[in-house]
Image 1: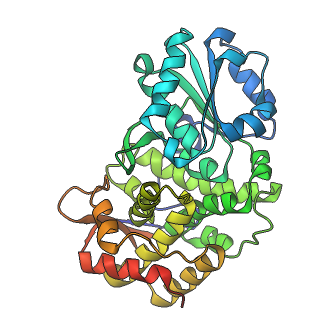
Image 2 (image 1 turned 90 degrees about the vertical axis):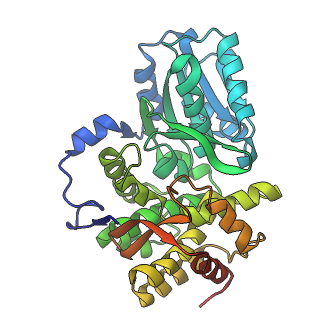
Image 3 (image 1 turned 45 degrees about the vertical axis):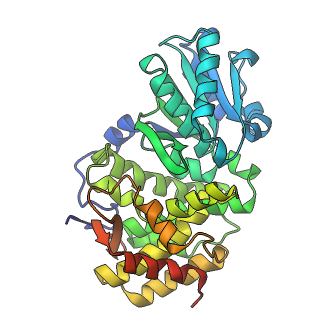
Length: 373
């Protein structure tokens, strides 16, 4: 079993990383901007108009595309998929491929993905396969996509009822983040992204976690929030740069997701809307509970964090049985042997990967989700 420890107050998990920030940015080209129109125009200078394609969903086409619209972006090369998790599907990818082919996209074409995690995941996957790979730029427009989905090169779709069952690692040419888009989001969408930020805080510990636990929800999505967002993105960037293909340290980023993805799979089966961040928030409660049982995580701190999460997110009672949720967890991509593989915490900033928990322990953790302290 491997342990990844935080050894410096200014670094996330993994100890002293030898990579400089400039090298990290070169491998994971994330750009924070307050001039998305100007920066995108400069990126498109080397592309002929007929080689530029855009992917949106029905919401970002209405609210976000007008913000970044460029003279080189032709209407006939704008593709729109329906919003919602049920459309993170092979059919959406096929639609993108059909249009790219019909509009004679070539290997030197560019796909600009404007939207949340659904758009960047589906668009990135489609781009990675079309003609064995065309370039793409991600412009994430939700907090969740800005802090998580657009960073690290994971792409994919849901398949056969399972979350992110099909996918590939394929880094975008660039990720352009502008917090201005957050002003268009409802509070629940903001909270969905904040759950991933809280996960990053638990993984790195220290001052970053303290800031997150003390954040005023009225500050979220304002200009002053961008510094905290940037810190969170840097946590993930450093982890991904050290372990791009999830062979070791990157598994730490799955904290809260083993349970969370099972909850999402239940929602997909039922056809109900359930935000990814809500699922991760509840997943972190369950997996912190397992951390108390298995890794000696401080019980008082667990209750403090659980209370904080439950004050922000509604109490969730899984409609699927613990047995069925456990069955979905058995399909988790981290599993390399019998049972379910969890990322757990010994303490904030002290992560332990590859922990296999018993069915009884998992069931016990699931049962506490509908309870309050």
